[in-house]
Image 1 (cartoon, rainbow, N blue to C red):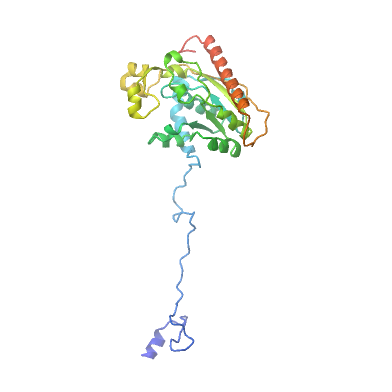
Image 2: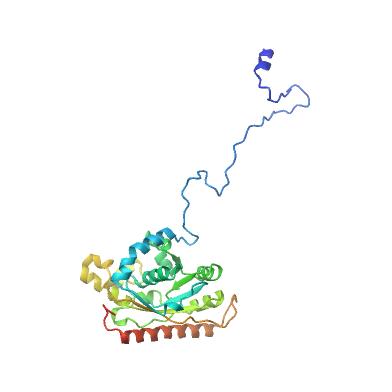
Length: 307
């Protein structure tokens, strides 16, 4: 039998004498190992590579949205720009605008116009409440929405040199009733100014006319707001005019957007703290600039529908 074993043993197999004193108590026979796939590389090389960046933005989704939104931009709102040359072609900048409408129509118009005419991506800062909504929050991030906090804004402006859009009025702006339209609310505590100073970028103010009337709030239902855990529950003229469709249908108001000259700050970037009085003064100065521009645009407007 030994001879049979010797004849059937492969010629290249190692022979171990288990009766030898030098032999180990257990014989370990090396086995061939399969090549390992790096952890960060998918095993299937044919898997589709995602274009979603670290902020959740998808350029394919943005391109699709631009295609779908362009007819509304051109033929429904008929958006016109003034002072577009003030927008920087490169480098980071913080765009600050007035905000209005039960479902704001100003942010999509601003972002669409800048991306199509300037050819630069733009990120919009939004309240965490909006970002946390199921489905809506995910879609918002895919089209360039980012949760509003100082760290996110600083990284986008300083590290990645992007254009960032912010509405300092927040929900106080979108919650204004029709009788309060175009009266800017306080710009928070001026945090947007401090972020711009720290990142070393200018602030570009924008004044938007037309969004206030696209979905005006007639009154706010306090009880429904509490039940839905929302800052306010709007009852809009669109709901009265179109019924249930009024929840997602805008009036065809004429949009005009005026870009004001950039505001630069003569301070060193990267400081841990900045003068609180200086920050608040600059915030109020920018608010007044936008307010003055709105009043000037309203004085020369002939019609809500035709501009």
